Length: 128
Image (cartoon, rainbow, N blue to C red; front, side, top):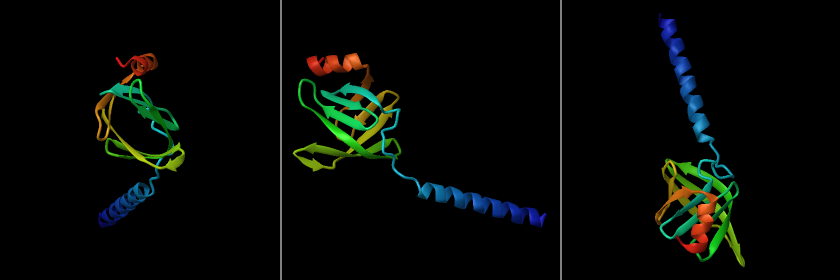
């Protein structure tokens, strides 16, 4: 019986160490998660997330395109480390919090909901 306890203690210790090692070696992804990809509108704001880029702007105004360098997740918040070139190259970090099944929130801005491509472009061109 004592050997059985020692063996179960060793197996538990090895399992704990292997799980801890896996969580320490997690790397950031270089593409956006498929659950976030799509078109979002709300609060006089536009967001379009593709596999390798993120487009953010306002209806009937400028839309800025960012190239995604890496994506990391902490809870429900995704940090997009991006590259933006307009004359100079800058490297902003954009935080997006997933608040519902089809809702996201750009941290510091209004909440947005997922829509179809047709609805996105109608909102972008007409503002409604």
